[in-house]
Image (cartoon, rainbow, N blue to C red; front, side, top):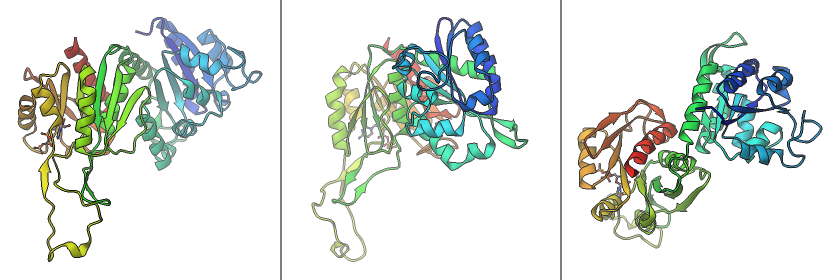
Length: 405
Ligand code: CTP
């Protein structure tokens, strides 16, 4: 798997940097070409000469010529290297580099290269437990995941400080396996395919101020769009209102209401090889939307009611058209999940339905993990373990890829 691959190893200044020569050696033993980029602080923990000798390449340390041990190209080394790599792994990734990457800083060689990177970026954070658990670090990790980075969580155990908790760099073999997994999922098996993904909630306006909405965060749909693009597909993402950055190389169409989502999907569906409806489309919308803000005194007595009508079911219509696209639906069920989801799969003539239960630990709205059951039209029911939404997206795409063949 690693043979002839181009691996960039970014090293930042944490004590676990002393283990990185072993990682470089393993990559080389597996037949990969390795180039190392390190921060000034990393030099305090591991020698550039060791990394240069083991990688059989010059090590890049500073951003500008003269501070680097050698020069790839005086002006554009970061662009060249950004295009050379098949994968970049930053290990150890300190709290500082996570903060910089989460906010787009480029004030040293590692962060500058990370911004210019064309290939997937795997981060292996390692630091003291309090730094890892600090809300700022956790927020940065979430943001980096949302931007499409893959984060290998640190392991628990005794730390260099003597404290016990999460913060240890995983075993070298584990980092190696993660790099293999990332390369495997970035294998461009969806190149030439058009994938349409929907995400997020729809908002159905009551008046200029109020709406009926739902708690969907859009994270699952964005993970699907991101993973599809990383696997080489041309991706269109139709999304309701969410607070998420657009994944790289994804065409995003913003909508607000179920009707707008219906129209956007219908416009895009013809060229789609697969349509994955992970959006939480409202089933009902107000019959009329008041142009003016509804005032309290307009309510007759103490009760107030809003008349609702059914929205158009996008998936149902796609299924009824016998669309040539692979159709994937989502079902959110708290009870009789498999039974209800299977009924929806049949009624809407889907190829796959992804069932999840918001009441299950590690699943549901606004969390970064999911516990999904994938049901196929041939009746196969696969319950997957709890995993990051990005990994669940890859699992769903593995099945979609097989159906598109
Ligand atoms: N869906 C759609 N158009 C709608 C409503 C839902 O395409 N107007 C899609 C969703 O994106 C999702 C699936 O259909 O993929 C969900 O099916 P649905 O029957 O709407 O599920 P629920 O809304 O959960 O239905 P119920 O409340 O009956 O459980």
